[in-house]
Image (cartoon, rainbow, N blue to C red; front, side):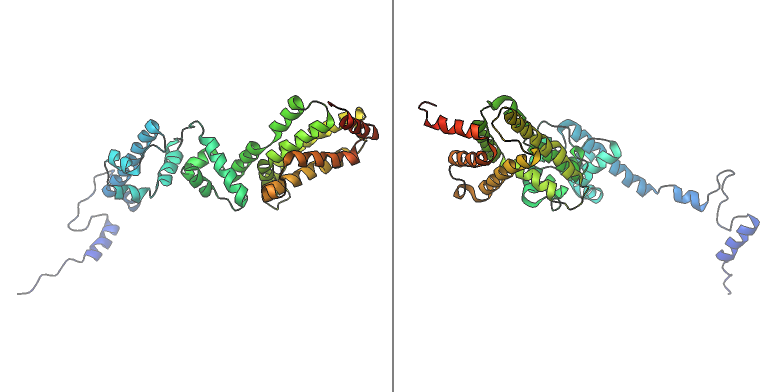
Length: 322
């Protein structure tokens, strides 16, 4: 008994392309519902739809927990539980907390970390420690986030870039507020006493002064914006305050006339050298700060003060009760 020949599926398919008649064993599509390769590709597979729904459910659960507790107030296993998925499923989509918080920010517009009191200061403090130890170039945002105890997306919510964070460090470390207070409230107008007080202030602020200097000099680019900020918003205002103070004492006959900037840098450079020595070598170099400041200012005034003022100082030391 002979076997009937099989229908040639390939030739039937080719025939259907020519005649428009569907091959044997298929159903013709209803008018207006012709299925093409492109439309089939655009229709998500049911499995893909389920997976997408799970991902959206995870984001929904995370958004609810962030709204209720903040980004640091939930665990990933809680998100999985609220979303009704296994932790393994959650980790397939979001391998860590940072990835989940980043998706919330980019896809839902939800701040990863509400602006909790002190959080920004906590980040800046961590950056100050790291940048002080290793400079700006060697410090990464991931290192700062880890030191601050927050996720990297949370860090980027506060600071869009490392330069923005370094700028905040410069402004926080800047001794300008103390300098302004010194010249407006603390200085009495007595030249020698004021300069001794200024030495004490600068040496006390040495770690902050040196941090600003390190950030400003860490990169080699001529147009480094951080260097410009340190110069125009920290160094120059302080130098201007000191220059104005010196000019006042020139007018009063206590200081010899001199070029403003060289005199400012002569005094400031010597004080910064003392501050650096104190930070680096501690009390082995600058043991008694009172004695050091007295000797330092005396040396400066020997070259900068007028003969009249030096005689006044000498007489004052010889006068009982003065």
